[in-house]
Image (cartoon, rainbow, N blue to C red; front, side, top):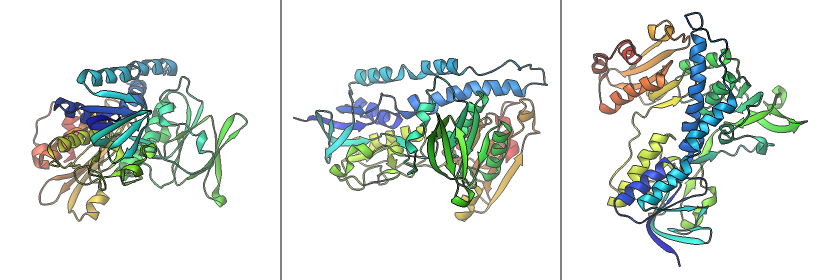
Length: 450
């Protein structure tokens, strides 16, 4: 006999937890299922552990940038094994803590692969669960590349759990994962190469600032090869060999580790969605404006498993989970808004953006003024020895609304939130410019960017 629940949630990350806790607090009978340890990508194998490593690399870099200005940093280095031990103090307790929170809240927590056997019926091992609704919030997984030797690639998750850092590392792809991990690995002493198939890495960011970041990455000693598509990976005499480029321009790189950084897709393959009549694609479960399956009204999806149009970011996952909870509890009544959501590449220095790029603004027919400059000579950059920094802020002509803000430099990941707040609140550029910020801070730089 199946066990009956009001809502069955698949996944245990930010989106899944938001659904489970909100609906349970409203008195609903809940079950949550994960084939992996409870906690989700961000807490266990993504942004949280990554930022621990970035923090150590930032400390080292900040000290080295201070040489010649009163700081002697010649003996500083990253000790990888100790860094991993420190990182695990954050990640190791999470699964048990998260499961305990579910249990204390009265949510039935189950381990195993969830597979649909009906429109709202899910099987986990020998157990069958029947829900009034099922919410898919299972996150993402590395995309299949379809190249020979793909099984030799190391995932970003495995990279974040290395006891020893290999001497030579090649990253396949030029997105967030490649750029962030390259900055960590290079500062830890590895020889790093990034192979990216397009003309520009980080395509969703301002091209001028990306160009500065690439220059900084190369100055760090990282080899960045653009318009270089990886075609195969092979094992040769105890090492790996990466093939890239067309036949007439074929090249190769030797490596001790090759890391998959060429994109991620919704982690839904093992769920037997066809048995539930759920339509899906590369970007996840196809949903309507309420995050409800377009083909099965008993199923909702949130976070990276939903083809919602929202960016694949942890805050967005939690936000969508809360919206799904509201719609399940009260009928479809809330639609998500993805206006002015900031995103950051945690390189050193970080690259941050919110809103439209110049090209997107032109494509959408906006008339605007682009306030842009390199800021290496600004006080806020010089005092920390940051030679690579700049901004590009787009202000709509006539209305004075901020259309987009793009920052590179020390603490850009924090400053971008001021622009996001202004944009979501409808604050005009002139009003933000008149704000009295504490000084001298990176926040006080905002008035000079407008």
